[in-house]
Length: 495
Image 1 (tube, rainbow, N blue to C red):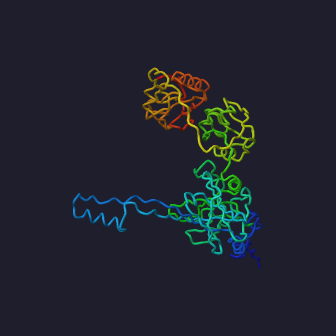
Image 2 (cartoon, one colour):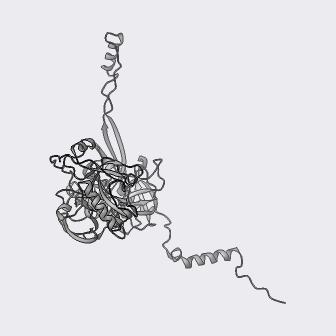
Image 3 (cartoon, helix red, strand yellow):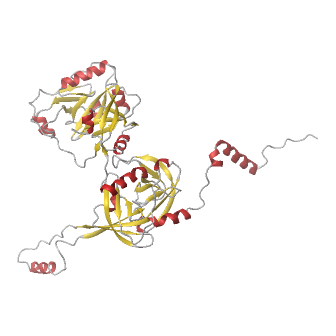
C-alpha cells in the first residue's frame, strides 16, 4: 500500500507559528527589541510632584459703552443721566480680568519653574499650584519670546521636588515619552505616546527645531514637560496642530538641548544671550543652485547684511552661500540661525562660503544678538534717469531709481538698484512673483544700477550656458534671491 506524503503544514496553528518564525528571522527587532512597558504608573508617581499648574491674570480694558443719543431737553435726558451716575451703568466699564492656564515644572528645589513665555505674557499676577494643592505667588525671573520660554520663581517653605533635563539629541523617532501637565485646567494629567518626528519647523521663528509627539497634548499643557523613560525632561510642550482645538495626536515640544541653555541664561542674566552674525538668509533652491553653479543645493543664501554687523565686518556679501559656520555644516537655511545662536559671543570662527563659483573661508567674530535694529541713514536723491527699458526675455521693464519712482513706490531716499516698472503677466518674471515697484539690486551677485548693466549681466549668463539668471530682489524691507529662467536660444536684448 503506497504511503501518502505528509503535508508540510499540518493545519492553521502550524502556519501561524511558521509566519511568526519567519517574521522574527526577517526583523530581529520584533523578537529581541525591548518589551512594551506594562505600566507607566511607577514613573508617573515619581514625576508628578515636580509638575505644576500655572495661572496668570491680565487686566483688559473693555471698550466704553456708548450713551444713547437723546435730544437736549428731552424727558429721557435726565433719566439716562441719573441712571449712568448712580451705579446702574458707566461709559467706562471696569477692567475685565482674563485668566490663562498652563503648565510648568520645577527645575530647582529652591523654587525655579520652567514654562512657556506665552503662558505668562502680559500677566499682572501669576500663581503656581503644586501637586499637593499648595498655591504660591510667582514672579518672572526672565523670559524669551524668540524661543517661547520663561523662568518663574516661587518661595516655598521647604525644598521642592525637581526634575532634570536629559539629552534630547539621543531621543529617537519611536521612543516612548510621557507628557504631564494641566490640560483644560484639570490638574496633573499624564499621557503617553512616542516621538513621532524630529527637527520640525513650524515657521514660528528662526530657532524652530521641535520634537513632534503623539502623546495627547491639549490647551493648558503648554509649558509642561515631555519625559523620556528615564524620567528626564527631553522637551517642553509648546504647541499642537489641531483644527478643532483638541488633541489629534500632533503635538510639539522644544528640545531640552535648546531650552536648557536659554533657561540657564534667564536665571543668570534675566534674558537670553545669543550669538549674532547680522545676515538675512533664504533657502538655496535647485534653480538658485543651478544659477550659482553649486551642486548639490545646500547651505544658506545671504539675502541681506546688517551694516556694521559681524558679517559686514567679516567681508560677507549678498549672494554668498554659507556652507559651514564654526566648523558645523549648514545643510539648509534653517541650520544657520541655530548654529550661530549657540556660538560663544565674542568668539572668532571660520565661515565657509560659496562665492563666484568657488569656496572661500572668512573669519567672523560673533556678537550678541541686539534687541533693536538701527535705522538706515538717508542720503540725497540721485538725478532723474533715462526712460525705462523693456526686457522681453524676462517679461519685465526696468528703469534706474528716480525721484518720481521713489515717490510712486515709496522707496527709501538712499535706494540703490534698478526699479521694475512693468511686468508681463505671461512672462518669467510674473511667474516668479515679481511686481512693479520691486527693485533689482544684483544680477549674478553683481550690483546693478542701470538697465544696461542688467542686460550686460544677462548676456554674460547666456554665454556661460546657464539655464537661469539669479537676481536679488528688494520689496519693502525684504530681500530675496529669485532665479529667472532663460530661453534655450537667442540673445538677451531690450524688447
